Amino acid sequence: MPMRKVMKGNEAAAWAAKLAKPKVIAAFPITPSTLVPEKISEFVANGELDAEFIKVESEHSAISACVGASAAGVRAFTATASQGLALMHEILFIAAGMRLPIVMAIGNRALSAPINIWNDWQDTISERDTGWIQFYAENNQEALDLILIAFKVAEDERVLLPAMTGFDAFILTHTVEPVEIPDQELVDEFLGEYKPKHAYLDPKRPITQGTLGFPAHYMEARYKVWEAMENARQVIKEVFEEFEKKFGRKYQMVEEYKTDDAEIVMITMGSLAGTLKEFVDKKREEGVKVGAAKITVYRPFPIEEIRALAKKAKVLAILEKDISFGSGGAVFADVARSLINEKEKPIVLDFIIGLGGRDVTFGQLEEALSIAEKAMKEGVEEEVYWIGLRKEIL
Amino acid sequence: MAESPFKADIERVEKELTEKMTPGAIAYIPGSSVINKTGSWRVFKPEFNKDKCIRCFLCYTYCPEPAIYLDEENYPVFDYDYCKGCGICANECPTKAITMVREVK
Image (cartoon, rainbow over all chains, first blue to last red; front, top):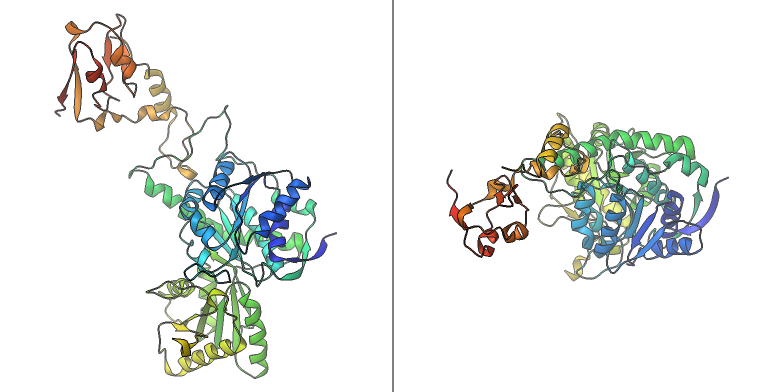
């Protein structure tokens, strides 16, 4: 029987790692993710998890140790956030390029400066081009599930790419919720043992990993990463189905909520989706035709799903906790590029919201919605809307 | 003239190697770098004067590639497929039996 426990998002991530039985965990503490490796080291010290827990001197080393472990042919896991993820940056490309299915838990946190330990998605969004698959969890249960799913997708032979699962700093990492811990036996069946055919350390079968790619070969190696990420779309769908059959919880690339007759669909990721669904319920009672959609998988970006969603609505309002200075929101850009060659497309609005842990209130969602309603009738006034700004101190 | 010590390797690798890109650009055939003829990088080429050679093996010992092997009489043979023209052999040669000349193609 699956066990239900009340736990923080970080503990849920640690439990997911325990259930996945990685052979190597290398991590460096950073707020708000510290509890993940802390809990895992406890599991290892208690003999509940048979793994090598490597204490390192930085996140750069943590991910490098994971690259080494994964290249040697074992399952590897790490956790970090914000500046820690930024410090891993160059190695993230290497992990993906070497096709090492490392899995990483991220407590999504803002980046300095100013220094800020609270939630937004700038850390993982800034790593979107590294070749890592990206999942975003709405609650602690999803954090656990999407880490297990990440292992399964990453290790699929059609994919072989690393994957990260993000869950919002403090809102999830430090908030307790009831979480169902799946049976170890079922997880073992679901994941199986990691026996890589492509990357291993075996003196009897010597291979060279981390090769030099001259101009004659580099592009093809990069194309293979592109191809793997494209394959991941199908693999993720299959894994979601298998997960649902085994554990009873349903996941989708894009989860729609009350979108069928919606004129305006508000799109977001992570824990904000929970707030948004409540907001939609409230507005529905008031007779407003608004729906919500949650992007669970950000890389590969769910292009087809967004296109299908766009056919239903007159306005897509993207609410995102990240900003690409000089352009706008990253999710907006991805939604826009998904729709650019469609014959008929809705108005797409870009809302920057909740940066650095600013609470996203119903008041702010009302503001975004009223801009969307106005845009539906009168057209778009601004390229990027900053919602909840304290204009009085600007 | 002695044979290149890499001859067997070159034949093996040329037989087994396909140019197909693997996931992670992993090289699965050991020693496959022998088919990468680094001699094309050369600007200066070592020229050998057998009359001056005292067969001290210093060039053979110092060559970092190694692109110098020895023939049946222990004279050095320069493997121009791999010699990058670094000039260490010429620098080490105590009798100036090796001189570096500009590569002309």
